[in-house]
Image 1 (spheres, rainbow, N blue to C red):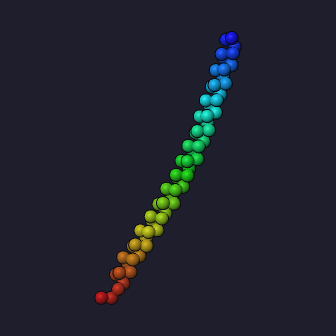
Image 2 (cartoon, rainbow, N blue to C red):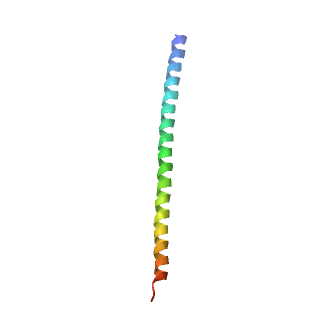
Image 3 (cartoon, one colour):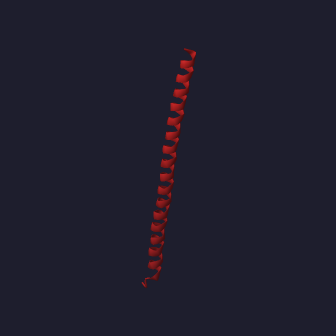
Length: 64
């Protein structure tokens, strides 16, 4: 009976570890996706800001 309890404990431990590894991999994948999205967002914001600065510079070129 003791051996059965130990075997059950090992199976449960293995299941818990496998679930934790799967969850960790999922979280890492989500974190990588978020990192890529942040990089893309920053590039888009930078592009918009540069376009706005060009517009400001273009106003200086207008002859009043």
